[in-house]
Image (cartoon, rainbow, N blue to C red; front, side, top):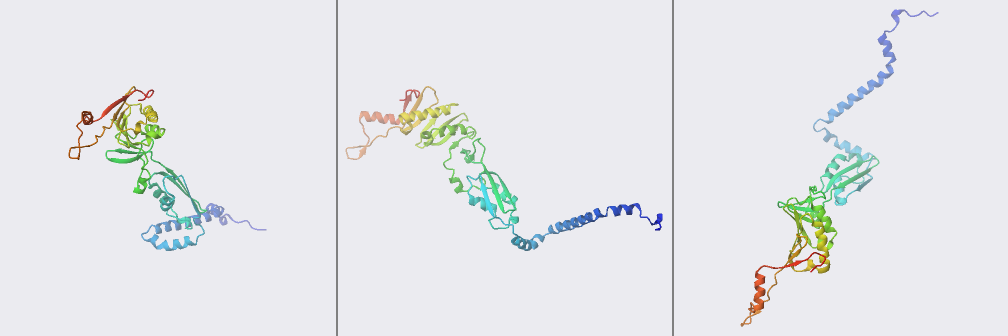
Length: 312
């Protein structure tokens, strides 16, 4: 019969606990060793010049890696060219996908003109997705000697890095002039868009004392719109032009500020030179022509017209 061990031969409680936890202590020790090695490697990479020394090895490993960019998909861009976007990304199909920095590419894209924000996604499958949200300009605002692009709400559109070539694309945008012209511009421009005959002849809309609008036409004429009634006045002007070709007549001023009256100031007639006794052109001294000259010297003639129900 086997003799039972004496109490002095039995292991201590700590020994029994260590034996029972032996299976857990080994993995924990391994994790501690790996953590120490990782921390040492991180500290080593932070030393000056370490990254430059390891760059050739990193590039060699990346070139041998199978993970490469297989496709680049771009959506949401209307004002920004695809070539500009690809250049800002800084990566091409076939290059190592792990060498592509999403953060750096996002910063470069956000710095492009007319981009509000961008989302860049990198997939290990090799696909890079670029989702762009642009902030398209609605009009050009001139004030205090500066030209700025604005959106429908009158806010300034970010145009950082805009070149002359980019600016040429927006020469057809409507121009609004004056302090405070940016915020109420949308309602006026929308009304003009509904009347192409008026819009095609307009050069700029000028805000007067931040209360009402004047329209400057291509032939130099000015249309004075009523305060708070600009939209119906534009529709009324379009109807008058359709029946009387008003905007094609030689006028310098069309005053629509009064609801029951339309005042038109025409250009003064030019006097034709008459030959004198020597055969050279000279002023005509006939009474009728003298009266015409006096009228011309007076500046311009005025004509009034009733409301559009009975245009003259």
